[in-house]
Every structure is written in structure tokens, then in C-alpha cells.
Length: 103
Length: 166
Image 1 (tube, rainbow over the protein chains, first blue to last red):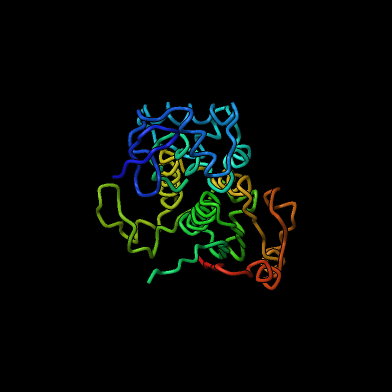
Image 2: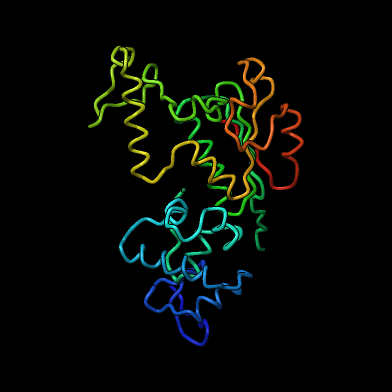
């Protein structure tokens, strides 16, 4: 485990750059990680991020299907928000571990 | 010396069988590609067409005869003779679909929607459609087209592309 500085804060990350402690996350960190992925965060992004963090805290498995059924955004919209990897980028920006999920 | 890596860019999957496990292997691989930002194209042919045939896609079965890996709940060997009894295949298949649902694995039509929502493309084989006397009206609405295998190959070019046959 390594420590890196993101948005002027020291956080613990794994070798893929995912935060290992969701407690260290805040919105500036989210924006900085998103910028590295060429994503500019909107309110809609944060709705998805809040949803992911909430479900993670409740110990639920995160899947694209679940987000699609959340009423926040459909799956097509989700791919538009996080192009090239809704779940892997969504969780990275949300300061969560990369989900171990095939769906 | 550093090892150069060539990440996968495109996955083309050909599905020629219509059992639950063959179709889901195809769908999981295609969806998994799209989820990782890898382009995915799927070609359904022969019995695989069941997966995109409106009448069949919701009631795919798994074979209960001649499958040595088939076991009872609890792990006991599943007798081949039992698998041949009327209703057993349907019951086992229903049980498998229920278990998959619990793991958040969607039904076939919803899975196809997830793949296309992520930019994946679904194709039907022209030859097999002629053989089974199917028209596009019989098929799931959102297929990207009906192709010959040659047409499909022409979509499978490019560097770091793999063709997978299930």
C-alpha cells in the first residue's frame, strides 16, 4: 500500500490508484481523480457517486445493473457519464475499491 | 528491459449453441468487455440464435443429460436417467435462472440491453436464420444487423482483436 497526495491530501491507494480507505475521500479528491480520467464531474456524477458509496457502506455488491435500476440514470446514461468503464471509473472516483464483479 | 503490453481493444464472440451456459458465457464475456472499455461484437448463429429469438430467449434450458459436471444441490452426482425424465430439464433450468438472478445476473433480454447500452453490437447469422426460417420480426428488436460470416469477419479486423467461439 502506498500513500500519495491527491488534492493536497495524503491518501492511501493501491497499485491501481484506488483509495483503500473510503473515509479519506472528499469531493476535491473525486474531482482530481476524475480529471486524470478526463471526466468533468457534474451533479449527476455525484448522484451516482453518492449511490455507490451508500451501497458500498451497506456492504452490497456494486454492479452496473444495480445502478441502472437505481432511478438515478439508466445504463446508457451511465456509460456516457463514465466513458470506457462506468463501474471501474465510477468507484475509483468515489474512493472505493474496484468491484469484483462481472456484471 | 521493460515488457511492452498490448491491451485488448476488441472482442468478437461467436455463439453457436443455445443452452443457458453457452449463451451466458457469451453474454458475460461481451458485457465484461464493454465494462472495461473494450469494443464487443457478438454473432449468434445456429442454436445460438435462440438467445436473440423473442419466443425463446426467456426460456433457455441447460442440458441435464450427458453432462458429467451436473450435480444435485448438495453435490451428489446427478443420474443421467433422472435427467431424461419429463420436466426435470425445465426444473433444473428454472433453478439455474433463479440462482443467477440472486447474483444480479440479468435475464437474457436485459443482458443484451446492457451490452448495447455500453456500445456493444449484436448480430444474427443470415444462413442460420434461413435454415430455421426466422425473419427479423422473430428476433430481439435491437440487433445491429443480420450478417453473413464474411460480413462479421470484416468487422473483426484491427490490432489487438480476439475472436472467441463458445
